[in-house]
Length: 185
Image (cartoon, rainbow, N blue to C red; front, side, top):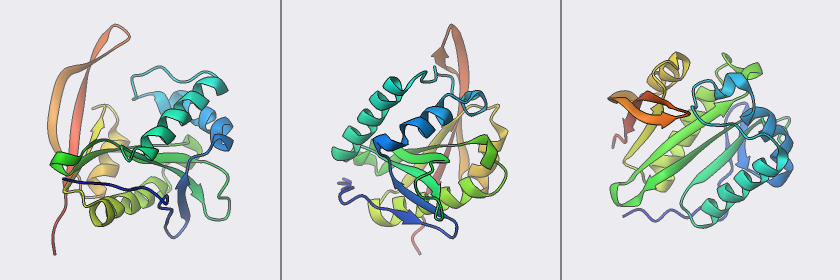
């Protein structure tokens, strides 16, 4: 069974990016991200409306991190490490199955620039090499074609299509599960 340990926090670096720990100082930019209509278009959940709600979300994220039940990275440019432009992380960790779900979001001003692909590659590599995951899944809205394309470009395959399995705001929604399996070489 997996026994992840996220202490000390694993800062990840790519060619352009630094993936670092979330802090309360990130609350204003996190609110701008999580309340953005374009970002929330396929999430099917109510966006946070104010700093108090964001601080409560940050508290939950940091508590999960402390309990090694999930990990959440701020995505920032190396030359501007304090400026959150997105987020990526693992939650719904299933230690008994060596599996976790990855999720991500990026401010629209940075879409279509390969940023999320760069971040996802780093997080997948960390998941397989450091956490020792066997499989990683992503749950997306079927209408989110850019996310499906991103996942496929990073080696994920469609594993399942669930019809009307998610209820939000009086409507049933479908979802697609993508996964990537660790390949031992």
